[in-house]
Amino acid sequence: MTKLANKLRRAAGLPPLVTIRSWMGIFSAEVETAKVATVDELAAVVRAGGYACVGSAHSYNGVQIVRDATAVILRDCGLKAMAYDETAHEVTVEPSVTILELKTFLMARDRRLVSSGNYMAQTVIGALCTGTHGYGREAVMAEGVRALEFLDGAGRRVALRKGQRDFRYAALAFGAIGPIVSLTLKTAPIESFEADTVICRLSEKPRHVTDEHAAMFAVFPYSDRDDPTIALQTIRPARPGEAPRKMASPLFTLRRVSEFIIKRYWVFDRLFPALRRPFQRLISRLDVHYHNRVITDPRDLDYLYDPTPGLEGARQPDILRSMFSPTHTAYNLAFFVRLADAPEVVRFVMFQADQYRKLGFYLKSMIGVRELASKSDLPFAANFKGPVAAIDLFADVRDYAWLERIQREVFAYFPDVRPHWGKSAIVDEWADTLGANHITALRRLHEKHYPGDGLRGTSRMRRLLGLPVAPPGTIATAPKASPNAP
Ligand SMILES: Cc1cc2nc3c(=O)[nH]c(=O)nc-3n(C[C@H](O)[C@H](O)[C@H](O)COP(=O)(O)OP(=O)(O)OC[C@H]3O[C@@H](n4cnc5c(N)ncnc54)[C@H](O)[C@@H]3O)c2cc1C
Image 1 (cartoon, rainbow, N blue to C red):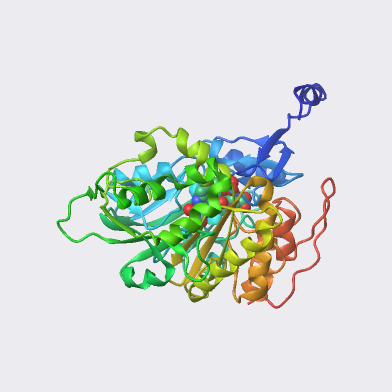
Image 2: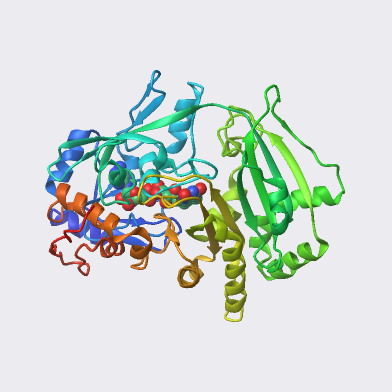
């Protein structure tokens, strides 16, 4: 929207339009926005209707970008209250609170979140709504939700506690319920971890991982499909008495070179894209092996990567990250597969990427595989049916649609592929895996609290739920929900 166009809107008594963009900018819309300082003001926006909730707009897949709706960008609102209950060890937050703010608040009380993603600018509630996860047990953040309150279409507070009917649908509803104005989460005591980084072959991974470990690994996508080279990260609670420490590698050794590769791989990948494949094949041929151990400081705010307290980004210039790291320079699409299928899916993705190479497509960085080791009772969580692996793929922004194609190919060959609500392409195919009964239940809940079109969502999300969809500029009317809800 040009400045002139907005001047004309103002002259006509209309509010200005603002462009909101998803992370990496693939999805955008010009919308009116509403900024509120209190829940009462938010309730007035809700009663006026035609709104959509945005957290910090960090989702990649545009789940937060809704045309024909007033965007309430909650991160920028004044709803920042946090309260800690020392008896229940639960924390309650309002919707403008970010993960970093919550982690810092908890750290001052010697508590931490059970799990979180590896980026902290997101709002806590936005991250929960999209099933944001780390790895290990109880890896999906929403598994820690104990209670929540949202505003219904009339602007009234509706409170739900774990175990109550409807709770499990409202707690992870990817925008179908909102605004959530209060959320109560379980916390854990701060703790020191033993974090190991190992470069090895995929076949060697079982040697380094026990039941005690939380594990994730990153695969060099152009190494060797039969037995790819991986950078494995495992974490388990540190043994009592172990002080925070980092192992230093001697200079001018293959170990030191390997360390350099892991730490700065994304810089190399971005600066020398043409060397990506030959370099990875060389790593594979050299059969590089490496092991490093860190005992983390219990007051480390990062995602268990370093032994020092606080945030690594606050100690080192962030410029390298924002110029080169894949989360800042690439499109990221992710989905979940059954844990046992992960090695085969990785090989399959490597095969697909190699096929598309002839067409000029490259996977950027590495293929991320995070293991979510436990089962959730939230029907739209990644691990509702049991342990899964999150497969994260990165590509140049202009190549993002190739990742959607890889997602479809994985769908075609593997069972029970499930969506990441902030990163997967949201398509009708997900309905089969998620279960018609669960989709109907969420739709029923949505229609019960938001009759009409007061709360709006993206067309992809609405189509998946069987809600009416209309082209931009028109408003759809609702067909009746199916009576087969559980
Ligand atoms: C750099 C980066 C790193 C990431 N790392 C990870 C990771 O490690 N693991 C992982 O799983 N994901 C990760 N993600 C994905 C990210 O965590 C999710 O997409 C998350 O939703 C973003 O939160 P947000 O506050 O930006 O929400 P938005 O993207 O703004 O919104 C997401 C959804 O939540 C809804 N919503 C937001 N607030 C409310 C509310 N108060 N009430 C009701 N509905 C609401 C919106 O309507 C929308 O449907 C990453 C994303 C980025 C950009």
